[in-house]
Length: 362
Image 1 (cartoon, rainbow, N blue to C red):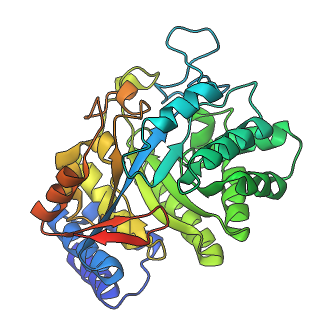
Image 2 (image 1 turned 180 degrees about the vertical axis):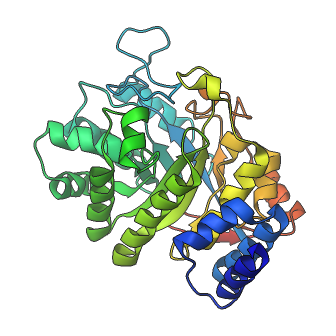
């Protein structure tokens, strides 16, 4: 029976037909890893050929002070708590200056939801960065951050996003999605932006011409049904707006947070999750393995399980996953090493901009 089910799914993939929720569940529960890798490779080749994308980027994390209290988070601090930080405008500009001569094309700005910082504060930051580096693409603010800052200024989501776009916002990262199931969300992040609002903010961004990314946090208390439900909501919205450009599975890391006792899922589970994600999300152009989270070796292996994007050089500018026990405690990759990793995996390395326009093929 299992063999027949998997054969039917394989026929769908080869024929470029959409797989169902039941198909995805069968792949999670019944398929061997080699079979998943083969099917995911068929799918990724149809969409992206042999290309693996990366960009030259760095992260800017203005603060880890946050009003929320997510049980899986190792990053957030309260005001005046040990380990808390806040960057003022001068510190932000100093960080921008560090990368003036490094051919960086993107700054990725995310952080905690600071109780005193609003829409105008962040719009001013964007204007300041753009005045100094007009060529730099600014990918900034999760839907959770946007929800707070826009509401704080009593604007609609459309009004707030247009203000930020005018100030220099180029696209929106995919963080804060976590897991969309409402009951699980109440357990994991009860005071955080809810699923309906997260999706509404991204839909609004798409409608005003901003591309966005989308994530899932997996490997905690969720089931395969929850992962599939999460992807289904993404696939449904993408059918309407076509505004998501990349799906990014983020592995729960267990150090220094309230869920630490549950441990972490295996590397096999990581690869399985990449493969099913690629097969199910047939309308999302790209699938990213975030190498600071899983490590460089696993990122290379993920290229055989549907992944076609490895994020960027980053240059040791993110603490979100290192504080939770990520493989790379000082995440940095120079271009030559990143290209070598991709080529050693038998793929073509392609440097891209944030919107997946090719800058250079290697």
